[in-house]
Length: 260
Image (cartoon, rainbow, N blue to C red):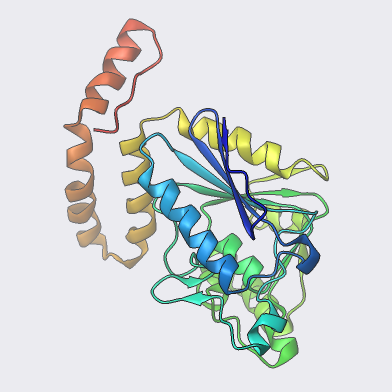
């Protein structure tokens, strides 16, 4: 296990098995995102993507809150948590190219909820709350929720959340398919790490291409989907990892992946 000794706005820790834990570390501000936090979060995502030994990431928040969204005090000072080409927190407009799991304790609202939507999977404590209260402040949830939420939950529910700004709890989010697993309070990170570990043991090339197909398929026509899927997946079937996976199965041993 490798840990960065750092008291900055984002902490990064490598866990065994190739899992990178990224922690928003501004508990005094309920992990609200300012410019420095956005830059640090983007750097953490870059580290996840660049490390061949890293297979999945977990995004969480310190101090019992996931993220309260944009730091309004920093915004009034002229700062922005939006990074060009990457969106809010350096993540919402360009999600990680490896699986990312949100581990949510407490509130994930406004931009914080949009960070959740930028993740592939979500593990939440029973006491977690999710919401997009922007309309209550005369604003629009423009960092991803207005676009993505209707794709993640039934449209009527998404519109109710967007139009009223009212939050939902973890159990309601799980019932809607927004949350993969609900844990007891304080257990979200452990639950996310367990899920990340189950992803990390699989072929990294296969997981990466599966993620790409799943994300891009919504924009393909039916006929285009088969052509594009074949283009993306053919190299996987011809890869060293595909041969290794078959050999490991036949020899009843754990595979030794190379990502090639």
